[in-house]
Image 1 (cartoon, each protein chain N blue to C red):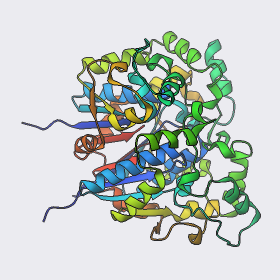
Image 2 (cartoon, one colour; image 1 turned 90 degrees about the vertical axis):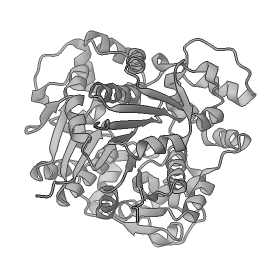
Image 3 (cartoon, rainbow over the protein chains, first blue to last red; image 1 turned 180 degrees about the horizontal axis):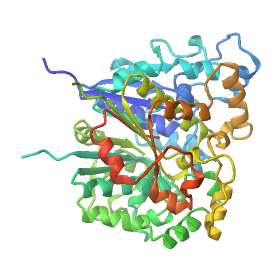
Image 4 (cartoon, each protein chain N blue to C red; image 1 turned 45 degrees about the vertical axis):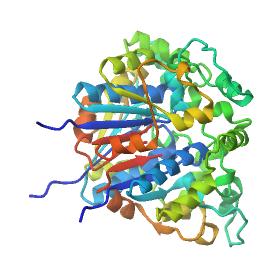
Length: 159
Length: 159
Length: 159
């Protein structure tokens, strides 16, 4: 039996375009039969947030964080300053015109392709995010689990 | 026959300093006899734009993108906010003083060292960039070609 | 004798949160018995600056750079725009509340775990940084040394 190739991506960034790049590479790798993991940490966790407000108990600072951070992939901003003004809206129009797949659908596609979506528990704690607020069907782990995957990875990226 | 080591870099960023880092690593790896590919996607495509305006037919949004994005390596901005004011000009003066190689020359050097410069066709389409607008001698490919290179890569980076 | 696994990280970013991510991964990898190198280049060099002002002779531009760049890990800013206003102070309060380890301590921990901290001599020269201004016990090298480490690396990241 041939062992599967492995791709791991740390998604640190909370930018719409960077998350798109991460999910396009991940979906591509899964299509080429790689075993793929996306490990979401820091602002990258926002891609996994549910769009609706989930009523959970939080301290003051955690509430503030929760308010300031975008809820879900569709609400994330762009990495590129020049476009920050019109930004995501423009990109989404252009994407529609060119039949490109929007980020929320790329995430769905990843889940259908059995890409392992992991939320970093340490930074969830730091940013006050709770499991109820994140998408269903994802896993929760720390840096040790990431390293166990990545040390046998063929393609390891930090985005 | 010993197989060559392989380095692949995804250049996503449109920042002058990040592109410099990418090209310095790439040129170094080529000098150490690696087979090297730089895969330009999203804002990283700007490093491959010709400086002169190339007359091509574009839709409205594509024209706007083309106008807002820097034409070529020499016109890219800096990643670091504190320097955004004086930014690239200052860096270029400092580089001249220290005999560092400017980005356009690093790109030339890469082409002379047979580093494979690839433009991501999917994001070219998204940003409305056409082949005539990009440097001669580069290749055009998608995520599948990237993965084929990267899965045997010794050093794979996302910049 | 089994060969040790290897992790190499290029820390290009001068952002507090990105440097935290780099050092958390590095310390984790060292705990799992990897041989770990963090190669600090461009703004990532700021993480290695001593907090106190070190009197060294500099030209005008180098003085200006030295003034504009943060002196040491504790003074670095955040990557995420939304938090740039309150930013690092808020993050540090949250970290204290959640017993997370602050960046300067993560760097100390890395040194205790024999993680190789390298400063990129080419960008030190560019930014006018001198060895006296950086932490004790670090190494000085260029892109060739990085590649020698990374080409046998299991996990290679650019942060």
